[in-house]
Image 1 (tube, one colour):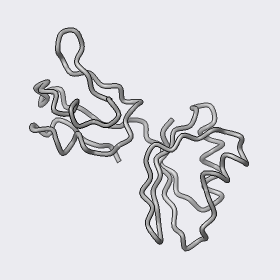
Image 2 (cartoon, rainbow, N blue to C red):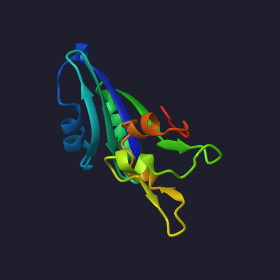
Image 3 (cartoon, rainbow, N blue to C red):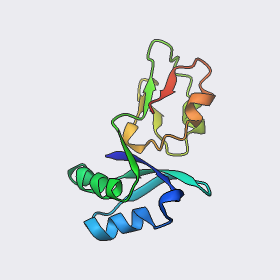
Image 4 (cartoon, one colour):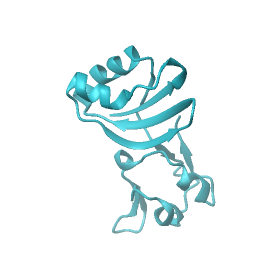
Length: 128
């Protein structure tokens, strides 16, 4: 399960993710991180069975948690299967099937947004 973790350094500068791994025993995969001097946002992936435990631990440390059920949404009426998203996506989320229609592996998405910018028909949108 993907969790978007938002935190403020005003509450301290402890290593939230490392602390959560130590305290919960759950391995956490960091997929994307934007960290500035006073705040940050980290997209993590944790096993579904451990998501609640990790969420509670991070909330107790002062972080905000948002569960991301979906990643990129494709409007199939607008999509023309041009493949522009395939060429720009760093995670290989998009691919063509044997009939040359566009397919997605949403679980690989790290919500970078590059595909939404590249799509000439505006058929892709980030959920956040």
